[in-house]
Length: 504
Image 1 (cartoon, one colour):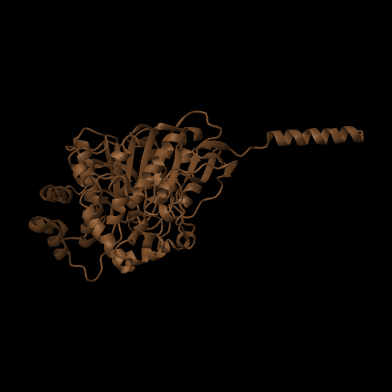
Image 2 (cartoon, rainbow, N blue to C red; image 1 turned 30 degrees about the vertical axis):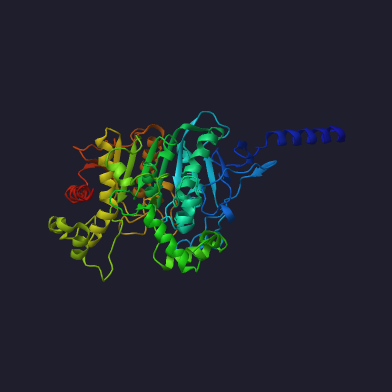
């Protein structure tokens, strides 16, 4: 081949190669254009997308503000840090990089370019509303995106940076409310999804909110907030429900707690919030932790939460959307040496204690020792059952489950153990068995089905019957796969419901 033709051939081949090379996906969102990355499974990933202004300086303890527009194309290829948090051991890596500028979300699209609108799941992470992040590790696994779902994970303000109430904050609020800033962040993220998700192939009219532990608690609470109405169409709660948990306190009580935290930091009586806004964020979290004044302390502020969430649920006034909820068989596997089961039952159930004691008199192969049974029942399992019953009593679809299969390397199905099955985030030191992989595939199929249609059944998995007040159906995830059962610890949970009704 003559030299000039060889050169021309090489030049033409180079042009064709460049023309065929994949192009990183760009979309327009609130604030400007962003550039994500294509994924090896034919989809796309967009990381670190801002859904509100950084809540720093004067914006600390204010409702999330709309993002400011940017010029050019913003790269969306790297996760942004978690919200400021204290170490609980498991979250050390998050703590090292966490910061107050943290209101970002991530979007996983199942295909690119978009061919047809897909159902959307917005995932709210756990961590007692004190720790955690937008589940970056699970985002990379893309388990639910591969099931055809547009998956969104969000950060939200944590601890007393996300849930501090104080009279001065209430006074400066146009809604005369304070606290619940973390919930406001989640609602702001849902507004962002409503306004932008179609550009990622998502259907804004088919959005599921889902979460585990504190994330499930937040989902449960958002089901009762008028500010979240219409922003989602289904709900999934894993190991968290408002029923029976005394976490939603009156605004006045939350404000008093805020004043105590401010006083412990030597804030002036007047101008306390200006002083607190000048402090490093970690110092505020430390002060709240030292006083034991942290946890799932949402408050009935009259705006985000006009009423007790448990009351709204029990009266059938929660969002009229299908609900899928459940717990692990042994959420709390053991008790401390100072734990007295009879004392705990009498303290918790009062005049109903004599009826409860016979229910906790023997070990159970699945649910553990009596103390573990009691704690799992009253903190996790029976609140979830009660909430599903309240939902079903209104005629709204409710699906209940219990996760029996232990995660690889564990001997019981404990708190958060189901997550490795949902996301396929297997520990390399404890690889999954064939039974684990079966349960994982079934769980992912059920969750994707429910996200699409509000019914988990279909796609070759065993039929999952809806819970009714009469039937009390639930799905058990066992070593033999998904098995439909009835009457999940019915005697214990019926008594729990009776206790809750007596307290109304």
